[in-house]
Image 1: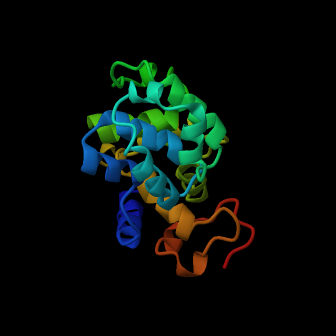
Image 2: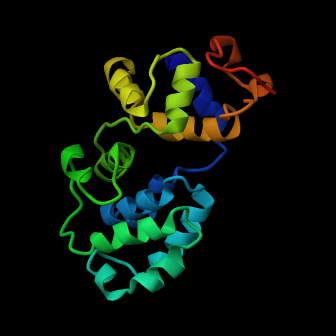
Image 3: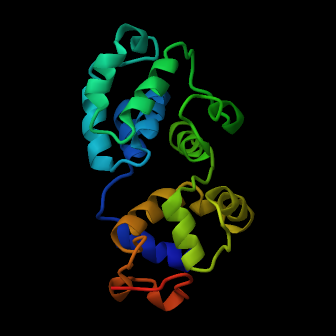
Length: 207
């Protein structure tokens, strides 16, 4: 897997910086990393980035969420998928005193699942963690590195066998790879840089 991920890393390096890392690089603020990661779920990074730039003009800290109406908040984040639910989650963060730095505490926050929590831990606090979404789950199963049914199972297996040096990188590498090459339907196997290492498990049609 070291070789495969190294090849993928080279392959996607021109495709941009992960959303959460971009926000942390600019702000050094765990709260803004948390907000951007909640908003980015099921939404393209370009859209999330644009919305966050507008939102962060008004929201600097959790208590600012008390000052903005739900209607105005929804108007700002409307381009985001599931914006109505996410606006409610953000409003519920208004009493937050600090962003937790443990998985157990983070997943108790509204709108925060294991993937979001692991991204925040890794990006905002520098803690090794494996964030597994549908792309990581799909690609790792296609490669035959895991044989799992759900992302949570994939996360567990990767914690047991993936070299730690890849823990902080695997999410953004395979998200980019999964969006542009190893797509859900009819992946681009003809231009895949790791096709000779891939058994194409579960793939029925390719390009």
